[in-house]
Length: 208
Ligand code: C5P
Image 1 (cartoon, rainbow, N blue to C red):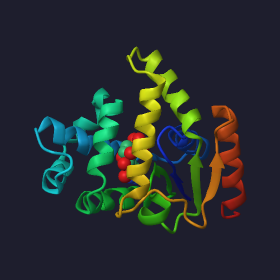
Image 2: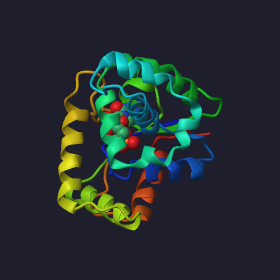
Image 3: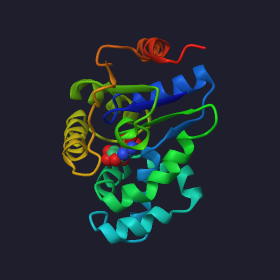
C-alpha cells in the first residue's frame, strides 16, 4: 500500500506520515528533507538558490548531508522552498522518490506533490492542512523549546510567504488533488490527527 501525505509547512503532515508508517509497518520518506538538503548544499557551495544551474548542481549532495541538524532550521526551509521552484531540481529528485514508493509492500511519503506528481496511483492520498495561526503557533512552540530566538509574527510571516511560493509556482504547485482526503488539523491534538488519518486509511485500503 502506498500512502501519499501532502500539505503545507507545519500542518502536521510529518507527524501523521511517521505515525502511519509505524502503524502499518511501512518505510517512510520525508521528501521535504531532500529539498532541504539541496537548499543547504547550494548555501555550502556559495551558490544562489534562485539560480536554476546552481540549484541543479546541488542535487548531487552527499548522503551524509541528510543528517545535518541545520536541515531542520527555518532558514533552510526557506532555501528549500526557493530551490524547489526549479523544474530541473524537481526532475532530478523524482526517480529517487518514485523508487522509494515502489518498494515491495509499499511506503509512506510526505511532501507537496506526492499524490499529484510522484505517485498519482497511491491507494491513499491525504492532504493535511491547518490555519496559518495554528501552524505558526506550533512552529513557535517547537522553536522556543529548541532555544531559537524568533517571534510568533516572524514565523507567521514566513509561513505565509512559503505557502504563497509553494502554491503559486508553475512546477508541481501545492494543491489538494481531487481524490485526496482533506484533513484539517487546526483544532486537533497530534493524537487526534493521527487517529483521523488512520480512519481514512482504513476506509481506503484494499481489503485483504
Ligand atoms: O516539508 P518541508 O517544510 O520540509 O519542505 C521544505 C520545502 O521543500 C517546502 O517549502 C517546499 O517548497 C519544498 N518541497 C517541495 N516538494 C516536496 C517537499 C518539499 O517542493 N515534495
